[in-house]
Image 1 (cartoon, rainbow over the protein chains, first blue to last red):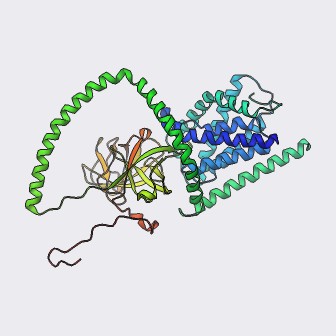
Image 2 (cartoon, rainbow over the protein chains, first blue to last red; image 1 turned 45 degrees about the vertical axis):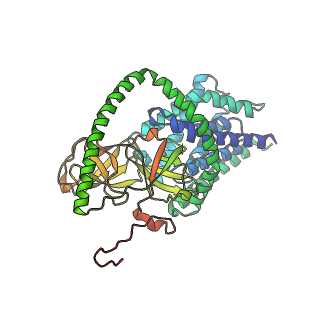
Image 3 (cartoon, chains in turn brown, red; image 1 turned 90 degrees about the vertical axis):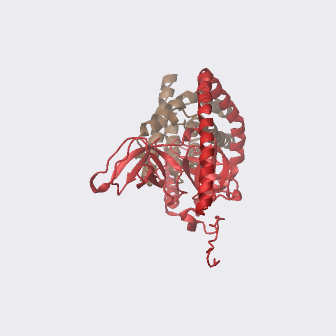
Length: 168
Length: 299
């Protein structure tokens, strides 16, 4: 029962982050690049969910991102599924410390953004040829590290389980 | 509780299945036309999300505006002085323009010319953007109910913004000029030579001219040539001078006139039929006025 409850909460958080991503960060874009808070929410939720639920939430979050975005459907779904899978694999490692957590979020965001660029290029969007690709890789990652505290706190408060893993 | 090995297998199997599903969906979306299932899904999602996004926008916009105002407070006095000076200059120019307009009207009357009609536009508020930093789309609060169809040009007071590429009854998606899939037929105002401006996914645009005989200079105004969008809309300014290379091919950068990061309100040009009208055969396109031969009276 708790599993379904947490999955529903995670989907709710994804929806809220999607609305914020498309409204608040439509107006607040330092260096013309917004954070990727849907990706960050997937990372935050995947820490607490069952592995299968984490993958399903990642896929759903990505698919919703595709639906309101301008690229082909399925590309963010692939990307966020991979990020959720990586988070599920990493969370069992007994690592601690704020720097390690920040490095993990930074790395997963960069990897997610890069994976999207590669996959979308495979589907004809020439994303990887963009002259300022590095901005799309690094700026959302920095943003995500800064925004991690409130989003991790929110996911922790709403989905906290008995066991705690990576980045708790 | 399943053994660890089997559990790992199940998770990996689900992971691979979802990846495969993602690739299948992407392939279908790339292969299908704009009226396919994907567009229906997009339209449905946008209709569901739009009320939430509008609500969030109503709360967020004043707050963001307030903080922007506070952060700009220091420069306001200087800006005010500059604007007052500009107003005085513009008032002078306005009086000169009014005099010129009267002259033009008189000349048109003498020569029996009909002045060109202004293009009909629909103003719309930008309420949302795409969901990732790679997206070059904006959503506006006007849709097919307001006479908007796919392909129409979207402008603001500075120039061309992009084109409408998806619509619902009450909202429309605008694909910005900066998107690599957008190409616009243009003319360099100073030389009158034509070319194509394409988005490159960044702040600047790329200008390609395939039959260039003269060089373009930095700062030259680039306007639409009337092939897809109404003619004469400012697209941007040549960012660096360039000369024609072998085979008269010229390539340079164009700084867009519009500031895509600060879009609040835009106008959709509805009084001009885009050339891709056949894509939307049932769309309420505005027909050109009927031509009546003045000598024979025949239509």
